[in-house]
Length: 110
Image (cartoon, rainbow, N blue to C red):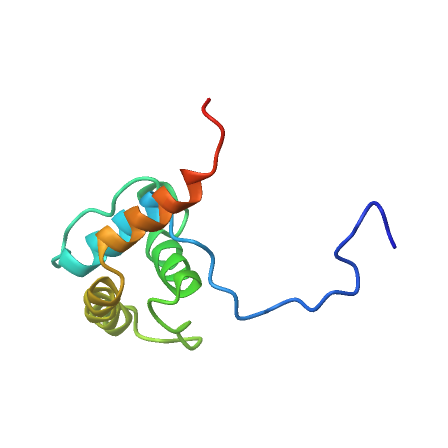
C-alpha cells in the first residue's frame, strides 16, 4: 500500500459531478432568470472571458453540455437559460439545504 497516496490503483469516476455550492446555485438561478443585457454576477464578471467562465461553470455542474468550438455564443446563452430553468426544477433548493444539513448532522459541535 502506498501510504502517501492511499487511492493509487482505485477506480476513478470521470463522470463525477461535484457538489453544488451556494455560489454555483446562485449562478444557475441567475442564468435561468437573466435577460439580454443583464450584468453578470461577481465573481464571473471579473473573469477575463466572463461568458466563457459562466458556460464552463454550467458545463461542470452538468447544467449544459460543453459547447462545440466556434459555437454561436448568443445561441449558447439562450440554451443555457432554458437548461438552467430545467436544472432548477430537477434540483429544488430545499433538497440542497436538506443534503447540507445531513452532512453536518454527525459533525461535532464547533
